[in-house]
Image (tube, rainbow, N blue to C red; front, side):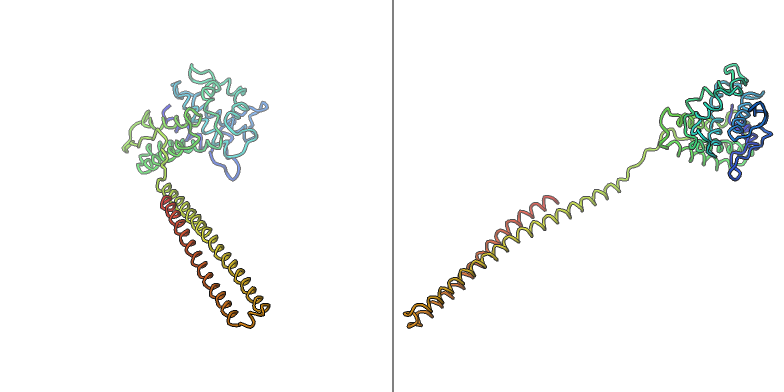
Length: 356
């Protein structure tokens, strides 16, 4: 069935079976599907699920059971997929216990329902509505929360059909562009995996778009439309972002290297400072001992007491020796420290140059 005929049937159906909630409830017109309500041997559909089941039967009858319905068994499958898209969207509007995908609905309300198993299709290829539905069972294992995405594309196809029929060029172009945008989103969706139910449903909608001109009389507006993408868009890698990340990592490593280098230099200087302090302390002890020996010598040696000049001369020599030794030790310590520091500094500089 061409998209023009299928959308014509959907347009009539939507007037009595709105696809939006009124407040928080469905707004179905019971007179439209009452003859399809056969629960407890009466024609009343009391629950939402019974109303939806009856509405689905009415839609199948409009598509396949009446004179003027599709006679091409090759297209029955695609038309049934569109009915399943509608069904999934309607079920997604409100929660229904035990129904998260169309297969749940199939096993509970279609598989053993005589209204689906006994009603005949206007075609010799299929003997019942259920037999047609069974051809698309592998399309139905999709969470009903996703079906509204496909339903939007179905609605856009029918909006395109209405705009073209009314020769409204601006509206037609608007719906064409919107269809292309939404189709590309679904094509690039992570759920779109090759040979999955998701990809199969999307393929059916793309065929209706590509064959939009089939079965219609041409109007005074252009029927042209851009081709749909057939492959997922390759995600571009942000090279600039990667370079910035690498630069940041390099700076961090450099800072860490500088920190280690600074610590190494500090650790190199501290031991030699400690060495100088120790040498000065030892020297002070030596001089102090020599000084006390000098005092002892002065007090106890009577001969030295008589000869003060000798004592004074010895004390002076000790004092001069003290200063000489002190200056010599300091010079030696500083020379050693500077030489060692320079050597270590050269080694550290080489390491830093290598890291850079």
